[in-house]
Image (cartoon, rainbow, N blue to C red):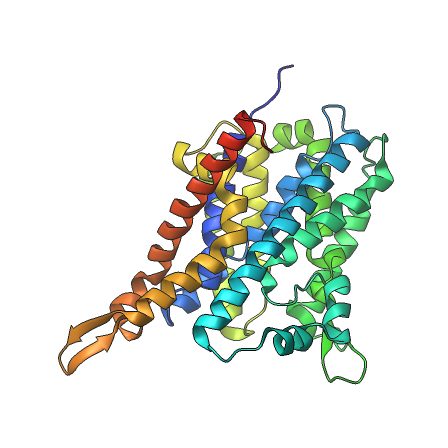
Amino acid sequence: MGKVRYRLMDTIKGLACMAVVLLHFGFPDPLGLIIRPLCSFAVPYFFFVSGFFCTDSSNKLIRSNTWRKIRHILCLVVIAALVYAVFCVVWNQMLDPDWNIVEYTASLLTKDKISKFFLTNDPFVYSHLWFLGALLYCYLTVLLFDKKKISPWIIIVAVLLWIGFIAFGELKYILPIPSSIPLFDTGNRAYLFNCYLFRALPFFLFGMLAKLNVEKIKKIFSKIPLVYFYVAIISGIGIALWERTHIGVVQFYMGTYLVLGSLCILSVTRPQMGNPLLEFIGQKLSLYVYIFHIMIGRFIDLAANKIRVPGENGTRILIKTGIYRYSRPFLILAGCFLVTFVIYKAVEVCKRRKII
């Protein structure tokens, strides 16, 4: 049996990286109220795909391959940390010429923030980079399965961790259980649903289980017409919107899991579906978009804050206009794709010249 090319996974990854950008640079309300719950599937899907591809064709974990992925993630962590450190210095200097780097650094390197960095992967400044730390922890965790076939019994662990994530997240408003722990005497707390054990590992394990049972999944779901999956996705979106208006703001909703589950099953059972453009974005650019979109968005906002446009009562700053607020997500997406495409091409050139 030849190697299967999961084109739909890359296509959905392309959609997922766009969803992440919309989560962080979304539309103003009331449109933003509708869009944000639709985008919550993105990060769990990335973990699912990572888990799906962490074993070989016989569903064994190859230690050398896992360490290669760990080194790759560590390399990305170092690059992202250095780039954002430079960006942080430049950005703060632009906003405040009297900014003091020593005082700023001291305000970051506190014992509670250092604890959260290790406990919940919260970076010191740009919180979206938690994803890399959580992914690194997932790969380190699955080293326990070194050269062993993935046991179907890990579904119990995955489900229990997933239930914990729901309990500490969405159900924290209902269940009388503590969802956070205090950090020293600072008044700050570490939220348990941000721990990789609940926020990342269950979805990573679900991906591994999907790989283990790919033939069973295909046998059960391949004959189901696509329209049923689309109905499930639309229903999940509707449920998530209802939850958003009746429960409040949480990271994930029960409706989100219906969307996520439908997309994961489609990825496995219809691997050759896909869109060429989204497939390219998902395969080549999605990780770069995830890492650098905050920086790109900040610079676009800064430019919009410097531009003045004519209005009925004189000139106005572009960033305060309705046109910019509603076009902002599209501008940032375009900027992300442009910048990350340049990064991708530069990396390809370096690889061909064996520079990296």
